[in-house]
Amino acid sequence: MGTSGPYSELEYLILAMVGEGINSGYAMRKEMNKMRGGRWSAESGSVYRVLRRLESDGLLCEARKVGVPNRERTEYDLSRTGEALLHSWLTFPPDRGEMAFLVDPLRTRCYFLNRLKPNERVRVVKAWLQESKHFIADLQRDLSASATADPIRNLAYYNLLYLAQARHEWLKRLLVQMKPASALQPVTIGADEQDD
Image (tube, rainbow, N blue to C red):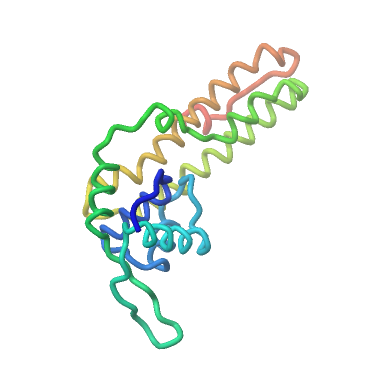
């Protein structure tokens, strides 16, 4: 038994949740579903698979079983090795690969917008802007509802909102850039999109 590494973001997330007292697979999945925008899956299969790997690697240990017989829930604690690895992950600077991992499927689609006719491109980007506006409004509501007493944790949640707002600004610039390509079709940004 011993660490095998390297570990994924999901594995570190699960270690950190155990360290915070979120120590059953069910509780983890519930917490992960609140954390929108992750690159990990909150599916039960992936969470329980990671828990088994981390336990096998000696980073977690089974603390107790709770609940009624035949429906017991296993809860975990960090081992000393798990605590040390978690501390290292939190304190070690991220590499450039982690910093560059800004996934945005709209950016991927944007690379190929030239396949569309100019007026269709404008229509598509306007639709993206509308969805972006609704997504930001939903995020703001969710963040208000899930605010905690911990300002650092609140700012971690707000990271997604800030990224969504930056993407919205990028979409507005994209739409403006399309004006010359569709000179025959007047392009207007609605008042709601100008103020966003």
